[in-house]
Image (cartoon, rainbow, N blue to C red; front, side, top):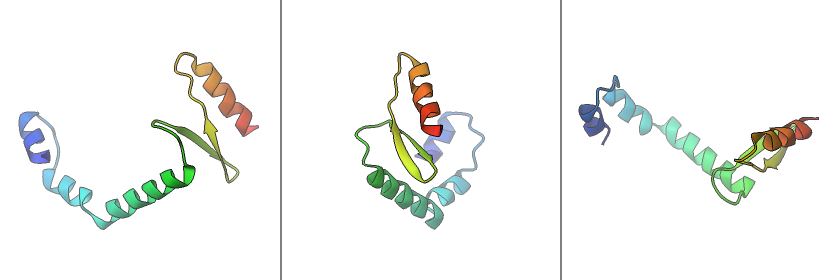
Amino acid sequence: MARELSQQQSLELDIDQFINDLSSAETEQELARQISLARQLSQQGFPSLVLEHDGIRHQIPVDYSDHWLTLADIIDKLN
């Protein structure tokens, strides 16, 4: 698929390197780590915003109509 995409568009992408990186053990390990973290957080939905501060994870409600409310909640958690 990556090869087809690069042929359809003028991407400056080393396809062989991309395929090697995508299928590497490091990528698999990072994916497993991210999945494990997502399960630990037990968030309900995507996207979710979680702030980790002083070893404590806080779920931050996202208000798409007023970003100031979200920012205020983050600032409150940091203080």
